[in-house]
View 1 (cartoon, rainbow, N blue to C red):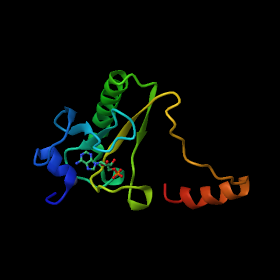
View 2: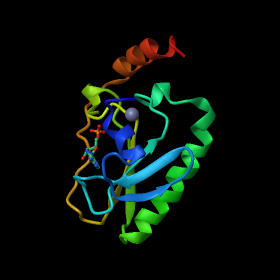
View 3: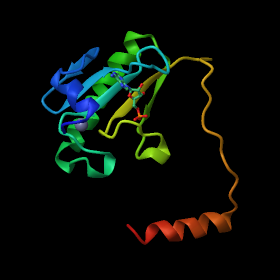
Length: 135
Ligand code: AMP
Ligand code: ZN
């Protein structure tokens, strides 16, 4: 896509710190990492988010993510990693070319997880009913 930042990175029109690539995917270091080794994995064919990601590439994507996550974790000596994806602006997506964040985690790295809300069973049931009719 012409005006897409990540399409330009994939084509080499904008520089990036490449970690790895194959025919379908491209992995590079995030320019503003949450922790050292924070890596972005993007499909080479432009799509906006997970919901329009092609089914034919799903299996290969998982293999690619695992391969890169393993190398990143070992490479920076992390104790674990978060795999994240922001879908749409409300969820924090800023670049509208689908991408996965591999974020290395270290014991006591000071990052906290999201705050949780308290819902009783009745509320959970009501929410479930709203969701399942779309499956
Ligand atoms: P998101 O909020 O999920 O859309 O994430 C976009 C990510 O892209 C952010 O973590 C940015 O730091 C990262 N980013 C933006 N521009 C670049 C760039 N030129 N090279 C590497 N990472 C970038
Ligand atoms: Zn794109």
